[in-house]
Amino acid sequence: MAQQNSTLTTNLTRPGQSNSTGDSRALFLKLFSGEMFKGFQNNTIARDLIMKRTLKNGKSLQFIYTGRTKSEFHTPGNSILGNSDGAPPVAEKTITVDDLLISSAFVYNLDEVLSHYDLRSEISRKIGYALAEKYDRLAFRAVARGARQASPITKTGFVEPGGTQIRVGATTNDSDAFNSGNLVSAFYDAAAALDEKGVSSDGRVAVLNPRQYYELIQAVGSNGLVNRDAQGTALQSGNGIIEIAGIKVYKSMNIPFLGKYGTAYGGTTGVTSPTNVGSFVGETMEDASGATTGINNDYGTAAEVGSKSCGLIFQKEAAGMVEAIGPQVQVTSGDVSVVYQGDVMLGRLACGADYLNPAASVELYVGASAPSAF
Image (cartoon, rainbow, N blue to C red; front, side):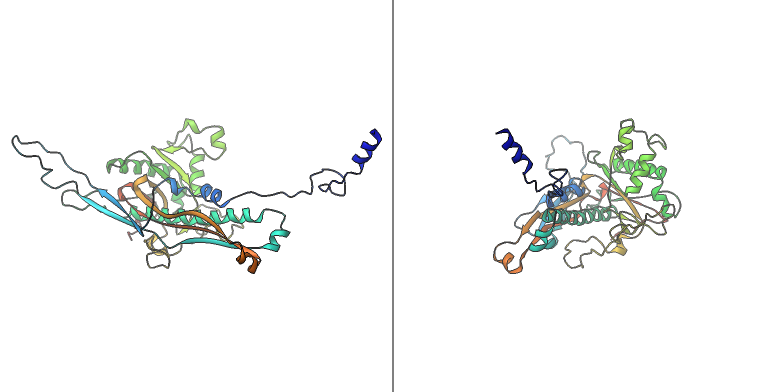
């Protein structure tokens, strides 16, 4: 019996071995995982930084903006029927849902059979990336637009504060945007401006270009930027900046930055461009005004957004995002798959963004003059 067991072990076929030797799992498939929802959630940051509302049975959502009121002394014997000036004044802001935003791919059955990795999961993840990128870009353009606006409350004697634009540095060079000392000063100016305009300190954030973010990390402990919680391991991991002046700092490649998205090379003094950056790095901003097909809100043309914006500081009430259809995946099947011998994978999202409270928005810029309102 012992001899028989030995023979069986010797003759065992191991399909995972290469030439019947070595690792018994060497030839097994290495499956890549990833889903559209994970791709979307991991790559969008704006969704948690601004006001988000779900829209049902309608094309737009109304946000009410209430101005401040005053106090007054009561005269004995007088009826109390509200302030004599009719305060507080009220205005509205309506955000409309843009047309359906989609990202799709056709997966041919034979390609899927021949592929050595999980083709659908990989494509689904990239679809999620595409939707998240557009989501953040629209949201941040709405915040930038708000920073250039006056308040919707203009009642005589009750004019509310509007948006804020702060110059980074004192020269006309774009390189001022990357100077840690200039950035830290701008943060404190922004915090003071938000305080002076009565904006809550809860939920204040900043979104910067990655190079600005890492420049600040290198300056921890100098330039007045001291963060004892961010030394050692945290500093070396690239997460050294927690907050400045009570403002939590994020980095993104989707903010308006010197006429591009997230970064700008070529002619930017003091910044060395890496090689082989591809077509998605330093991508030029597209037109996204209300006249653009599919756009029902106004995110401005590329010219209106301009080439001098270099960072955003804002509080949660600065902008709102209305979602009629959250991020979803749809896949064809049945007869359609038979006819085309493959499936269409579709990611979709129906949303729209706009500014809400301009006073809660701060735009950083370089150059002699602030970008114009649009």
